[in-house]
Length: 323
Figure 1: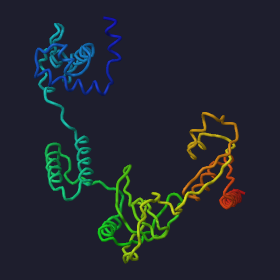
Figure 2 (figure 1 turned 60 degrees about the vertical axis):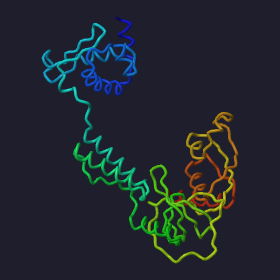
Figure 3 (figure 1 turned 90 degrees about the horizontal axis):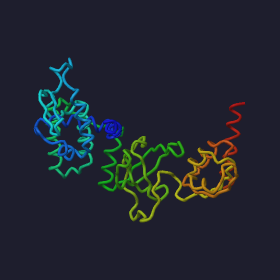
Figure 4 (figure 1 turned 180 degrees about the horizontal axis):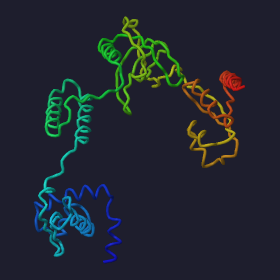
């Protein structure tokens, strides 16, 4: 008996066990006299776990919790019989919150299905009606992606008609707002965000823009005839079209420096106290300057010289503000 008690403590995760206990009651009610061995096989657990679960159920019932309200459960003979459990004999119901989550999931799924798949849209609408009627979940559940309709509508029109648009875009890399003329090619969703793939006339290359960072957008005349979109391109929402090679001296290899410049590979061969000089690359000069300044005295930018001078000037301005 002592051995069984020790083993039963490490048999199942609490949430999984709770779900199994809720499923056991209607299952036993429909399978009176089932053996413990068969019951364990059906639920995919050990007989020791089933014995532990049955012991727990034996102490469950309606409020009052006297012998009159507790479930009458018998399993000492190796076969399980359950009586006096009419309230718990029905399968689990879906709560309002669970129904709302399912309704939101159906809404998101429906938004990703092409409009020409009327069969799928119809089936989803039927499911929505059933959930709304059965669980009292509001039928009009909407999901907002924080995208202005005045942005997405002309974007889709521009894609369908191959027209250029002028956008005012907020870039997080440079924390600047720029005006660009682009030819929208396609939209897609990744990581919960909506993106626009477009050919930027400014740099003559493909760029990726987050739709929620487009401040304003307006349709303009089609681009010049014969303007081609190159087959090979760099997908980024930064203005620079080429990689920038830069050299830094790491004076202190802190965790912040490692994560900021993606230098985890240096940890195995270099102690944190040793100075390192390495060459890296980035698509954004602005990002390089901000990254170096953010590390304080742990990193020194050696090249290119123009970026080094700009970092020095910014550092001087920051010092003057404090003095």
